[in-house]
Image (cartoon, rainbow, N blue to C red):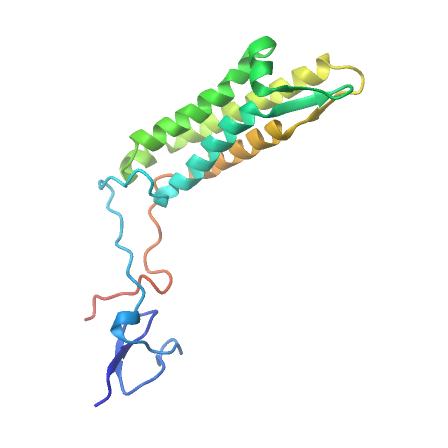
Amino acid sequence: MGAVKFCPFCREPYEELDRCPAHDLPLVPLGRLPKAVAPIADDDPLPWLDPRGGRLWLLGAAAALLVGFLLPLASWGEGRSATGLEVAGRRAANFWAVPCVGAAFVSLLLRRRTLRQMRSVRIGIGVLALLAATSLGVTLWRMHRGALPDGIVPGAGAWLVAVGCMLGILAALRYGVAPIRGRGPSSGSQEES
């Protein structure tokens, strides 16, 4: 008798075959099967640094908002520019919403660690991302109105804050959603064994 080999996709065992008849993939020994990913239960807390459940989107949004706030927001005239911190401190207090939203995203990452808790704040994440985007738009518009006739040129900080707002909206769609089971070679069914 030949050794038992397994399909890396469906994990079905076969003897005396070299390819899976259903998927036309080469069969492998049991030790070479990819590790199966355990499904996430709704009330099991995820580890602090686990990117599953849309946490990576929210972390990216928080980082982009906080770093973008410290970079040059806009430039005008002959090489003059201002960071988001300078703009918020001097003329546009509404721009403080951007780092506040970034800090709120970090707080949600630290405090909401089960899928059920994460899903409960998805609408709030979307609203906060739109608040930061509105603050950016209003601030740039006010800066443009008050600038010289040449207008302003959005800087790296403005673009990074815009990316952070878009990531926040994507996070609102994905936060607390479990990875899809039954997809790919690492999550084949084993109910029939």
